[in-house]
Image (cartoon, rainbow, N blue to C red; front, side, top):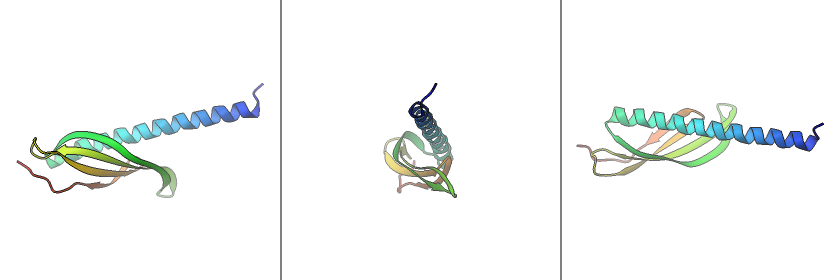
Length: 102
């Protein structure tokens, strides 16, 4: 028979794995969003990295608030950094500095 500590350990393990998958899904959604964003703006996406992740309320429900830093180029030679803020799977803000275009 399982002891209470065994059940608690299994529950915590399942919750940690589920949150890992949730954060991974959010990262994949950010990559898809940034690929579309850069394509629409005529930019070349160079790289994407998760910068900050914190747990909080998103539209009244507990979820992850995540900030991504991405590098892009407007002319193929220069490199710039932008910031994407997401709440759950939803992009809420994309900030880019002034950049040179061809």
